Length: 255
Ligand SMILES: NC(=O)c1ccc[n+]([C@@H]2O[C@H](COP(=O)([O-])OP(=O)(O)OC[C@H]3O[C@@H](n4cnc5c(N)ncnc54)[C@H](O)[C@@H]3O)[C@@H](O)[C@H]2O)c1
Ligand SMILES: [Zn+2]
Image (cartoon, rainbow, N blue to C red; front, side, top):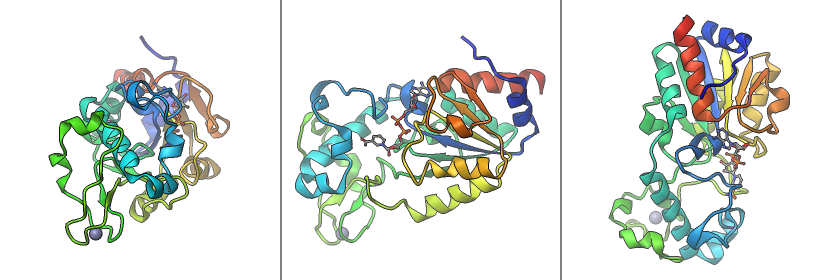
């Protein structure tokens, strides 16, 4: 299965040296990691992720929030990078590729991408809710914990406060380092790719808009229109796996 790629988009990619990529949940959909707007199945079916991913949920029911993120981490752990992740890693053979992801999974890294900024944090970087010290003991969590609705968060070895997920919740600020490196990557890119995001969550969604405002070509890969379609120079209506691997093929075939 292929994807229709506009010649201009392939040409812009061929001329580019620095390609900055903005990814969202759709990037990992073909790895079996459900997007936020997909209905969850099983244990967590009746929970709205938008209610769990909040400081308020953590304050009122930390065991529920911790269990939910453990379950997400388990799904990601069982999942593998898809052809789209691999295409972005392969693009590093010919281009400088800077990825700014809204995803909290590690599939870009596992595919081999070397520059990944996690704008919304990571499932695999829990930290103390009080002293912010990174927590290392996560691998020791019992496997059956992923089948429970409530799991008590571990205690920080330094201050005994509960350890929290290392993700950014609604209403929280973005991690400084990730934000700074992403922000510059969108200003000096030659081309920006926007992959699998609805583009409605700010400030992250403002990054590709900045690039567009500077006249940098923006190429979207998404089977559906998104809030960023309007600023895209080209919108390729294909999945991440199909669209990105087609782009790699097109660059290789005639490059
Ligand atoms: N916790 C929550 O409840 C919640 C809900 C929504 C958004 N968010 C936050 O908002 C951020 C942004 O959301 P988002 O844009 O990443 O996810 P999203 O679920 O809002 O959008 C997913 C996008 O991917 C597209 N898509 C689906 N399958 C695809 C595929 N195979 N290939 C390419 N595209 C595909 C969809 O058309 C959609 O535009 C998230 O990182 C998260 O932090 C959180
Ligand atoms: Zn602590």
